[in-house]
Length: 138
Ligand code: FE
View 1 (cartoon, helix red, strand yellow):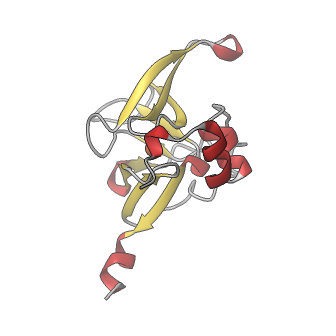
View 2 (cartoon, rainbow, N blue to C red):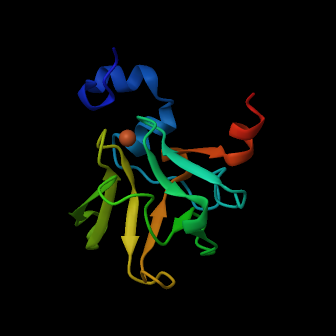
């Protein structure tokens, strides 16, 4: 059985699209307002595009006007991990999937209450699963 957390980079290249690979495995960033999840407002869950782990829920999404999907919290503690990222001459808090290690985006401290955090996440790093899909999936 395929274990996402044990995939080699070669295997990741074969299961991810070029853009997914660039973001998830090479810590890339999609151009702002280019992602297909920026304006999603339906209820549902956001899964890691690498391994399928549920990382965020629609209740935690807010309109940040930054051009990237933004969340003030994660679906469950421990689903994501963070690391200080000093690339591009900035010190930012990088966030990645706790299961497969895929790069998701960065966390900033200018988000809304109750956390004050803004998880700035690449659309391409997430797969959205609308709630209505499950209900109609009979
Ligand atoms: Fe993952």
